[in-house]
Image (cartoon, rainbow, N blue to C red; front, side, top):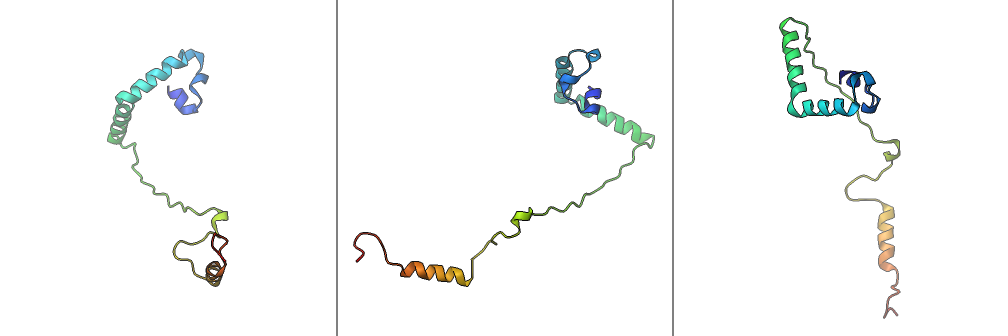
Length: 103
């Protein structure tokens, strides 16, 4: 199991010396479900922290997310203002109707 986690290969590529990959995967999944991996990690952390081998350093990433380059010219939210819109609205009102009874 640890070989697969260390190498990050698919379970099907597990060397034959470890047995059938399905058996190893089922055991891994069962241990994950019942909390065995969490208990092992906690045990190792407590043991190593007791002898001073764990360095508890917290690092915060300040990654900046930017918009895609094609999003640079997108329309802003809110009411649209400008001469072009006023002209188009006025032309729509003045245009004669092509519907029935329009003479």
